Length: 239
Image (cartoon, rainbow, N blue to C red):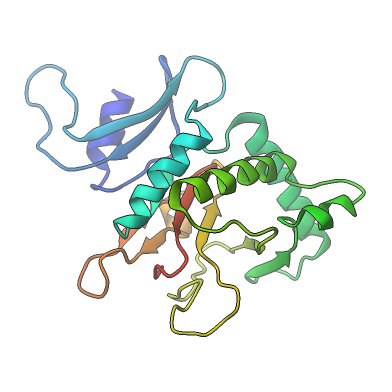
């Protein structure tokens, strides 16, 4: 009943928070809408259960190569790839703890905060006494190599890694990560976004990502900031 209630209450295009039932953990993505069943049972048409397990933590077995392949197709079609549960369990908990530690040391109240780092640079990492976000960085290293192979784009050492904290109710202006009209020797090519949002997040807190895949005429795609979700998109895409 909990599964059906959550699925029928959500709008098409919604990615819901992990839901636990007696069968395990579920992540629900609603593809399209249809009238709820009037008889006994039945599922909402177009509702996809992205992951389910009977253990105590949500998990995913989607390989990095598979994510890269799907992301390459999505970018060729002008879309973003949304991958639920890219981080889960201990890896997600560790990344959240590292983020909390970083901003606790550099806190400035409830304002939006952004810290630019060189954590994607292998040489920079070697100089650190301990490496924060070790699990995340390891997966991103693999994903970057797989994406270079899938897209044919050149993989450069390093890259920008921003750590951002948004207070409840805050917003970020519509923008692109790379302006294709600017003349620069090195350009951003692919952008990654990983949500470390707490599990008690609700829609009232804000923070949804609006991706303008269809340009000015199309309705923006909404991605909910569910913790552990990965979003991959071309850096010239407005969001």
